[in-house]
Image (cartoon, rainbow, N blue to C red; front, top):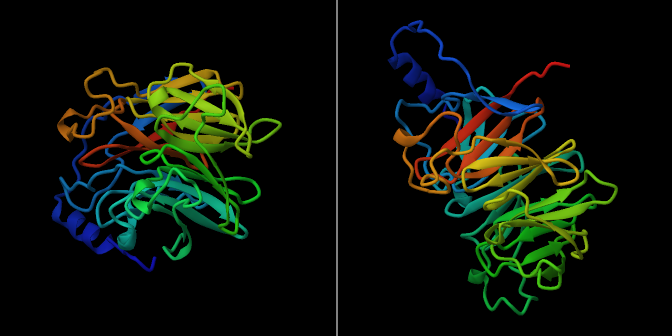
Length: 338
């Protein structure tokens, strides 16, 4: 990447400083989920270069490309990491996009893959190549009377429709949803007040749901503890309340729709928006959704504050958390008997 540097030399030096490997009895695996959505929690998955090193606050997101390279953001100068599935860090960089890299979405753009990033510090949405080149910028929606200046726009999530239209939610700003076409031309905005469910309250996540006969937009209306469903033209369809705390991101794979719930768990819905599995629910209500829970209080098999998630090509799940020290987890999809 033009804005990255390799950590391989640091990692090599660190590995040489460690003594010979010693065999220990293996702990039993920590399993989470139910049925077809059963996973093994991979302990100490991310291979940081030095013992005790933290990656910094992970108030961001994670996406995965067709080669199963994992990209996740942090709130440090190293705003974008690239990691292999075995946890080894390939690159770290993204310095021009530090202090506000938030929601990520990786999509096909013609023959190539690109990353869309919402940026709360820059008050805009960015389209990037996998090498870190800036391809397009969507400025704040100044045609909407609710916005007087750019600093009021704090976008939190983005997705792209089948025709290339870009959908964004301003979860930390005015609480609106916005649409641009593939050329970056503004199309429309709405705040939920025209629908039966009512106005959004911190719409933190948005996802294009292609599982049904017609595409839908799913908006994680976080502080209303619900999902709202819309057509791709922003017309209200329905709402979903089932077993949601603070829904924060939407991800789909096959017939599954995954909701990242900030208050300590992952929930998976079927095509009818019914819960089929829940993963990693935190047993301590006082920890759920908290930013400053340190590593000494982390427990394998339990999330604290999930904020982003992505599946790789094999169905393994990667989850970033809203955490001061920085926490990103890998859940290995268990093989189910046929």
